[in-house]
Image 1 (cartoon, rainbow, N blue to C red):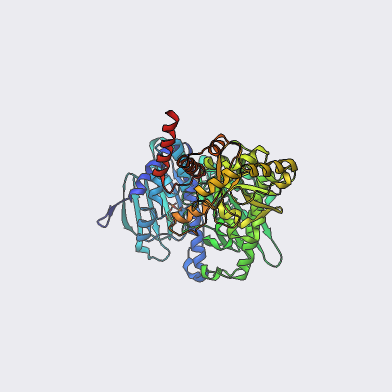
Image 2: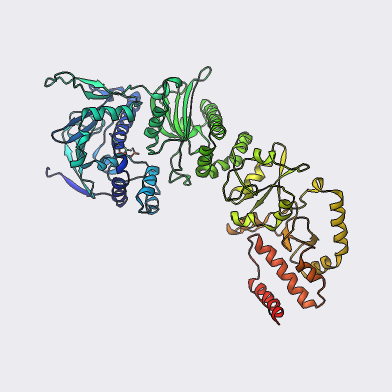
Length: 629
Ligand code: ADP
């Protein structure tokens, strides 16, 4: 240590993450090597990119490679790159803090249960800090390509909460990470083990990963290295030559995900535009999926030269969970984010890549139902945004949607619209749906009773976006969506003529009670009519064909907006004892009490809020007391 050594504390989040990572990833500890090589490769990518504009940056040191060395006696392992390096400030920021927004919320969400947390840590993306799984001291010697020989930096930490940083004289640009292996992790200081790990995890790295040749006698000053990996960018190879494991490892490299992807799609496009896309569907959502500001998009390469991470211009927002690489031959090497915006070549690629992504999902749905269900549970809500965001592809998106319906029994969204249509009853013209604040409320909506009795399936919608979704889709395979709480159900074609006659006749006979109710509830309902929707409940609320639905009204009110005034229609079940009881009620106050309770419970049953809950309680109590007297 020199006088200029400074000791600094890790950001609180880093401390927490380190602690958790060391414990929860222990069973998977060898991944630290992949992470360090991955960082080295990124550093080389960045340097190569900057040297396009400024070729002199490379100077005498034209080699772009990664060296993995070890010293079995000392128990050390070194990963060294000739990449972009770090300045003092960069080292402090990059290796002492976590810049990702939402990190502390994420960490608060951890459970303390090692197994679950391991998965969550995987979501977060491990990285440099994984070195502390196997090392009790890590030293990083680095010099930025923009800094002079005496402006190198040495960063040292035992991963306990502090790190020290000191100036360093360093001839070479780039970074070396030296791990002082824990006493029981010395097995990693072994050539055979390291070679096999590099091949297993880092074969696809596009730069050579070099190790000292062990078969020859090494002479001082002239060390001979050999390349351990194949050092070609994976996506440039032909699909038939790439093993599944290689695709998987490459995914882990670009995503820092611990888990394997669900599926991928790799295409080379030739002709007027030339580009290669390699897209992946992760098997779990990242912790910041709902943060619209968080980085998303593909890794962009131009003719195999890395240009930028998170190029979001190639995929729409509703496909923000897709990871992957796009390598274009048409874009200029000096392309910037600004240039990507509105560039016609980019627009064309975006259209094609979007289709590829949707095709990939359709294929997953076709070939691997279980995998698709996993996907849907993680990302379905995001994909739904596409029906609103991307009208041009709404048909393809509609085919990918999954819903909970009355056909199933649980709160699982696993039925496609095509499944629904194939089960439609003879004479059924619509795809029926009900929207509520929760699955439970949707499933128990009184409005479903008549449909269920007729064996007609109903989509049970309870996600926030669902109301928009069905409105935007409008129809599927020519079948219009129909809200079961709205207007006429349109079941006539399915009804026997006798059924209809009987209903009309019965409405005629019971005119008295319908009129009585309408009068008693004046100002609260638009009208009162006999229902074909109900079998068990006494009453339900229905909105007029063109009025705003109850769910939408509640959403608007929650958002502090005024919803247009429109009274509901009360539909009553003339067969229900309560309605029959009303019919024989001659005492006007009691009739009004019963009528009021009937309306309020119809409102409650669909998850609505009563305007006058105290009044409801009073009326109900009056009736209850009469019961007991
Ligand atoms: P991530 O790679 O996901 O950003 P890491 O914790 O692995 O997270 O690394 C944090 C940052 O430290 C990197 O983004 C990079 O800026 C810097 N870094 C890590 N390793 C190197 C390296 N070998 N050369 C240059 N910079 C590095």
